Length: 250
Image (cartoon, rainbow, N blue to C red; front, side):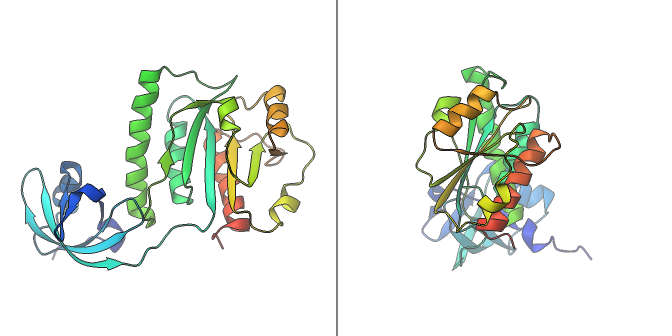
């Protein structure tokens, strides 16, 4: 007897425009996942999220080569979203490092992901930056399926370092491996801020001039300890500490 896929694998993404008159039309990519990967068909019950905070229970009504039509059964309570308004700024890095950061940041409840260029970062052309942003948007959709979030994090267009220092957040942190003053533990024991902006440098880290520039812009400069961490490790460590202290990771 064929076993059913686990519940967390039965989640599908459909943008708000795909909902009409109580029906949901899945895009070809989602339809292929439904039929070819999970081998589900008419009558299968699934969960659909619209990327804007809403989840629905649905049943498969029709399937063809390019699309599947689902009937909405009920709207489900929202789940998986952190109470902390958290923005991650990440220096552009080479290879697949940022792919990993995007996946993990989505799982960790980040609301916005802001790639930026700095003195030691990769300097991507506009065309390459656009391709990478499209890829990262796809990765966030894939990650939402498994981590049970309801809202897609917003991925901003790459900015320069000066622009990454601006923003309305009430708490701003820049993680710099050369910072020797400590203070991270005491900082995280403060009351929960309304919003947080975190900056993680590229391979090679921030320059002293950039750290001073961030401090002048209202950032607190903190360190993750005595060891040098790769970009994905540093981002995950920072987000874990912040969500544990101020968010819902407990």
